[in-house]
Figure 1: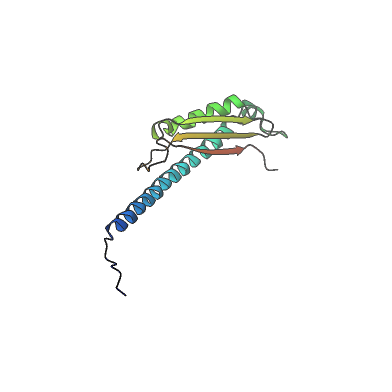
Figure 2: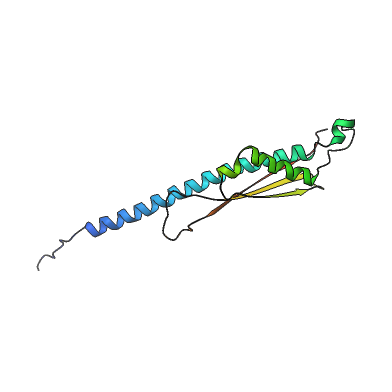
Length: 147
């Protein structure tokens, strides 16, 4: 019985593996960039919510007559204004072009919730991935007194 000829080129196999490896590296790099952008937005949303809760509850009643026995009253308009001022002060709109900020204030629960969304500028474009992905983050803060 004769021997089979097992000669052939491994170049197509090597090129195929290299392409798959490059695709995996691209996905990892883009996923890392999106994750880091989300972490930045998390910190920004937390800071904005804390500022909104702090300044949204520091009304004239505190400075005029003290707190007394009542909790601080959260003012939605003041909280929204404080969040907007915070985002402007930290230059968030320049650092994150296309940043959208949604502020919701729940007066009954004394909670300020800030939801931020911004496009993620990914370093690589992996075929099949969105060209302009949006990354979001949420932060919240509660106004309450420890008794």
